[in-house]
Length: 282
Ligand SMILES: [Zn+2]
Image (cartoon, protein in one colour):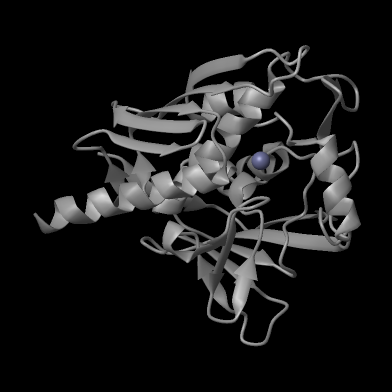
């Protein structure tokens, strides 16, 4: 039987927040069994806590935003992705602002924090979701299919319709080893046209080629070249691993994701929660 884990020691990371461009500090701390992943806004009175659950998602436009009471945090998916892959069921994520540091736009800095801290087994059975029947989410060109599998596996296809950006496909089982070597360092990317709009809205003040790859006129602009020829599809998988952790469970399933995005990922997480609840009542 799989047991719950937390981090061994508190660990801290400091960097620039993507949208405000301000310095942001993030701490990952041990938590008791059955806590789940709790984000805590230590800069606000009463340090409001927001549980990382799909039911707390309030915005999915440029990343996944969760809110509860007077607290909210944006772009939680990269932190959640690292926690999911490392098998951390319980942790307090302390933040001194709404945004985590964007780091290099990947999940590697957060994964390193967790590995630096160490993983502590808590000897309480983990919450595992194994689907009873397939779940299908469809929205225009996006399609997500979740089918039974004895481990978490993600197969993803993306396409940007630009000549040098042919359709990219990647498929991998998600465990600490594969995530560390294949997924964690894949960076976020944005389309130049969208970037112009965001800049005009006063957003992405902390954005630079230090933390994102930019797609412009069918080419990819990024620092030090691509980390993988298909870095974009690997980052999409990274995002799915993060968003699916909004179920609060270890999902054992094969997720086939065609052009996934945060709206569909979160819809899938909600459908997983519904199926788990229906099954536990039945
Ligand atoms: Zn991302």
